[in-house]
Every structure is written in C-alpha cells, then in structure tokens.
Length: 167
Image (tube, rainbow, N blue to C red; front, top):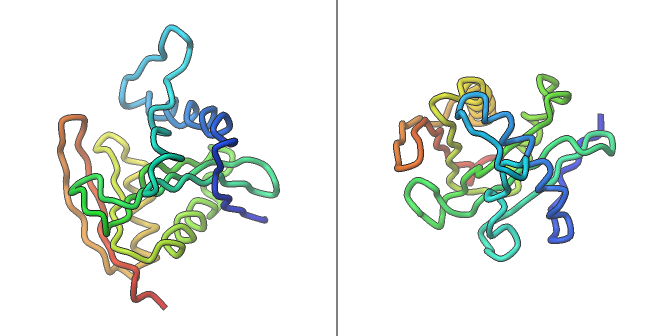
C-alpha cells in the first residue's frame, strides 16, 4: 500500500472543499448539524489555508486514490501559542480506516513538524478520542498528557506532547 501525503495547493481548494463535506457529514452524526439550503455543510474549515502561513493543508492518497486530508495549524487553538502545532482537521475516508493508514498519516505529519503538539477531540466524538489516544500513546511511548477543554463553541479533550527530541 502506497500512502502519499501531498501539500495541498490553492488549485486543490475544490478537492479539499469536497472532502470537507464528507468530514462534516461524519460530524453531523453527533453534532446534529444540518446542511444548508444549497445542500452543503460549507467549507469554513478551509479559511486561511492558503493565506495564513500557519495553516498547512495536505491531501492524502492511497495507491493513487484520494483517501483524506489533514490541516495542521502552527498555533494552539486552545491557548493561541504560536510555538504549538495543532491537528486542526484530520479525515480519512471510511474505506481506508482501520488499516493503519490513519496512524501512518498522523505520525508522518507529527514528524514533519517537530514541536509541542495538541490534538483535540470533541466530547461526543468517542471514536476520535479512542483513535488519537492509541496513536499518540504509541507514537510518544506513553509520554503525553491529556486535558479537558471547553470554549464558546464546544468541549472535549486534547492530548499534549512534544516531539522535538524524538529520534
């Protein structure tokens, strides 16, 4: 299985926009979101991807086929710290889940950005919490902490770790 993580360019915006719809569709199950009158959830998550230097969008391909996307942000969504990476958005199509692809993509992104990291999950997204705890536990050899967060939009948990000394 050939897994590629490709930096998304501005000309890839429509591809990412379509994948974001699938991502938001998955979230609608526990967030109760409805589509707009245009039949879409919208692509607000893409704001700043090509205008803000701290946003890093990627497309994921498996054996040449689109399989998901990642948006890694070079600042904390919890504290605003500009020296902390945040796994802003992470999506792997259902067809490619539970095959080790998500783990590989996540750890490659971590390795690409040695930093202090935070990875947030919503309280209602129990599957994501299970996935990220397993990935981060294995990646860090259990060297991470977990906190709860609550802001005006939602609440959840976040795993925090530093991979700058990883060899």
